[in-house]
Length: 190
Image (tube, rainbow, N blue to C red; front, side):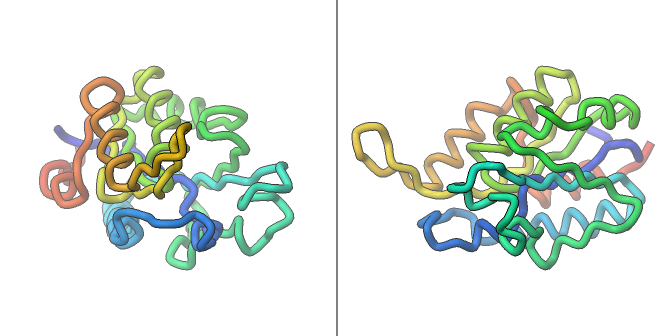
């Protein structure tokens, strides 16, 4: 697999709201480090980066629009002037945004997806990207999620949820890779 100079990195919802302890136990503490590594590589290669920011109108949301500090990107995320920032208010980065048109205009052959959380906005965006034919590559170790309570009160651990999401998406909606594999196998630019 070869990436072209038009194949963007999409960084979804890497925001300070995820520091809130109410989220509970999380998997993959290295996700942000891997996202940072990918951002640095994309910039070095001169490829486009699209940052997605979740801003909610729901007062009960950790991403409520009036919680200015919580909706900010984590400190290592500092979009450059030429990089694209889109805001969304639902799980998919395609709904209510111009992401679809941006990708069409870029003439991208693939998109590379990272961010938080695996089984929410990352999964929803990946499924839609696959359905739209954007050939998404989902980076398994540059995403993370939290434990969830099931409908009968049982607790599903974050790592299990993460693994199941990757299994559901792989080879149907996306190609799933880890950071090092992507950097080692897909560094050429057409």
